[in-house]
Image (cartoon, rainbow, N blue to C red; front, side):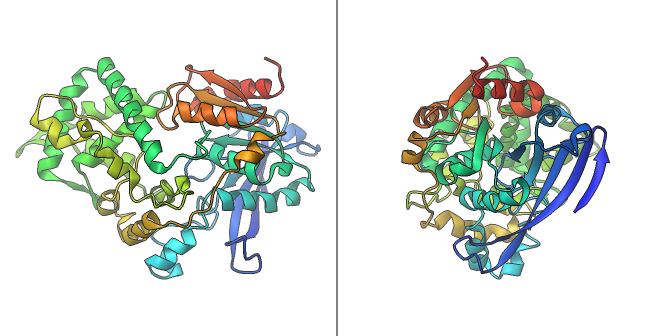
Length: 431
């Protein structure tokens, strides 16, 4: 273990060994990393533990600088473990560089089948007694981390003292098709709101889309396409996302000796915003997190998009309507344009075709739940359907919701201590 200090905090890097396949505990082992964080003034005290599960899938736990955001509130009463879920951060990362160690695409896909919420929760249950001495802990799950928390309630509730969820109540039984069928209309509403706020962006978006469709430039090996440009709509799910998108568009073009061209500034910003180099597991596993009914996900977002022709860029350019941005969805073309994903295209195809996903949630156990649970539900969340979330909330015995329009999906990051304070008050029946 390696301990060090930041202002007001003591941090300890911890490494754990867990089975790749929990059904074969004596088989191959992988390493999991977690960062313990405690207030410097309480470093020697016995404190309850809070496990933080990041959103994703495919993102390591946030790297904080000091007691910022919600972490400052948490360390007032908890010892916190910021967990890099398997395959992310420092936890046996899975990417184009490491996955070939497994073999070819088939072996890679079989390996990644062990990187869903069920395995993540079993990792947590092996780690917990090593830290708490067997005592249950509080889990704070953001977005996909909330999906993992619901899996935790379904499979190992005895390990939990309290569960706090922010923007992460999954449907218990929806296929990926149901998720995206509900998502596209939400995204369309967010795009309409953006264009109402910044009407000048309607023509800017059309001009950029037309240029990309004709020229398909490359930036650092990343092909910039009309579809990729539309995917910048993922920004619209955050509290400041509409403003970020507007500023990205405003300097798209420059005049050159060869005429009007996309600026290097815009091209680099678009490449950075659409690259999966830092989180390839998100692209590989995003639809797999919904697989559990014996049906393949089969590039669900791509198929369902055909039901919403208004999102087709060529159709928009052929008429006088606005180009619609898209949201949180992964498509086959991602694995063609992004150099971080290109070598993993066949692996992604095999995951999309997979049918042997096991059920993730246990409705009967959730209906009999005895663990105190509070969930922040953002009333027009672009990433997690509110209707799905509220149905799940009603299906988990004793769960209390805080439904708010004060924040978007990134409320835990944007609202910091206030959001965590509110959830703790809700779960403790103080409001």
